[in-house]
Amino acid sequence: MELLKSKYHFVKATRALLSPLYLFVLFGTSFVISSPSFAQMQIEISGVGQSLYPIAVTSFVAESNLPSKVTDVVRSDLANTGKFFNIDPGSTVQGISDNPDLSFWSSRRAQALAIGDVKPLAGGMFEITYRLYDTVKKESLGGTTVQVSNQDLRRAGHAIADDIVQRLTGERGIFSTRLSYITKNNKQYQLMISDSDGQNSRVALTSIEPIISPVWSPDGKNVAYVSFETKKPVVYVHELATGKRIVLANQKGNNSAPAWSPDGSKLAISLSRDGNTQIYSLNADGSNLKRLTAGSAVDTEPQWSKDGRSIYFTSDRGGSPQIYRMNSDGETFGNASRVTFKHSYATSPRISPDGKSLAYIARSGGYKLQLLDLRTGEVIGLTQTNHDETPSFAANGKFILYATRIGSRNVLAAVSIDGSVKQTLSIPGSDVREPAWGPFMN
Image 1: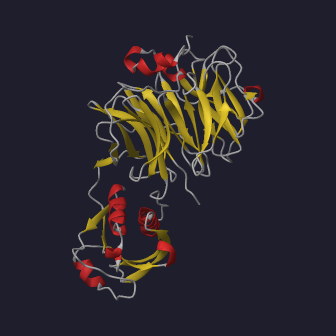
Image 2: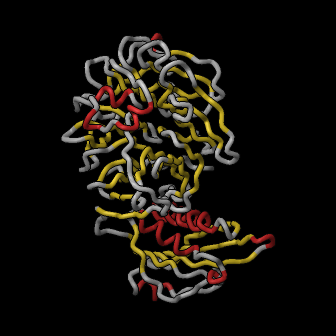
Image 3: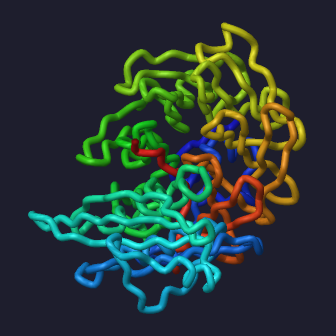
């Protein structure tokens, strides 16, 4: 098997020119040159059903004193779930001390009502309190209070939207989580960190060489990734709060495909130090390197199981790329077993947060996102696009983020695990790839 010889080949190659095996050895991705843009992401939603939950979110008292409206974020978040419909509140402003006319809002077909207050605090801080009501049962459902600075108002909106989703659906909201992804603008690559809706993006790293495979640590404080800044693929761990980085792996040959263990103490990676690409584990500080696979096949793209006892990975040991599972201590503790059987080509395994499902990319009339139920073996196709890559589960397991191509656009997309709700996240004029959805922060 011919491995990657230089960064130049990696950047210039496209999927049409590469064999399937060559592709997944190279971390399961490719970059496409595009024009520059630093705009925020745009979201398009499709596939939304008819049974949306109608909710009214009025403007909060004293919200007009803020540089941006918290309720705009709340309404946008709820709409992005594909489960809620925002009833237009008009110019209504209501606070928690008000006695809202629930019958009025029910007559407007709103089944829930959210109202709130904004209170200024010392030091440029604000306290934002909201209450949620069931307009049908005519009762309060509770609420929450968030304290933020005026530079962090979006976080308050996300926290309130999360609380609304929790109270109305019983599912934990994901609006307060973050995304990471890579953009390429002219000759510049950037590792971006953004809110879950793609807004409020910040640059974590800029390089004239490719950056690929970002993955979040379980506590959300660090991102591991592969950078070519030294003219070869090297794995780094990047502390987001400080910008401090350590070199996790810089072995001979390729260093690629980092994946965190569930407790954050270790990572699994792929190395070609001994000739062919194999899977290794090491501590989060780069110490205690240990080889886990020991065959002549190409083994790559490791992913830990939820309990940390197993590692899923991609291998061509059966002749074509498929996904296997082995003991997390290595194959010497038991032979690896094949997991995927429906497709002749399967790569990029990702385990759901509850450990019950496996997302992967299969060659099926194109490269498409699949979801495997690990208990029943049932597989469903989630997309109709043909260039899907690098899936990543949301922290609550209800959505999967991935990279794809729609027309001539290289975009990020998200799909619900039943395939019913789809979102496209694009940055106009920009190439955006390598998405990873961050964990819950508390």
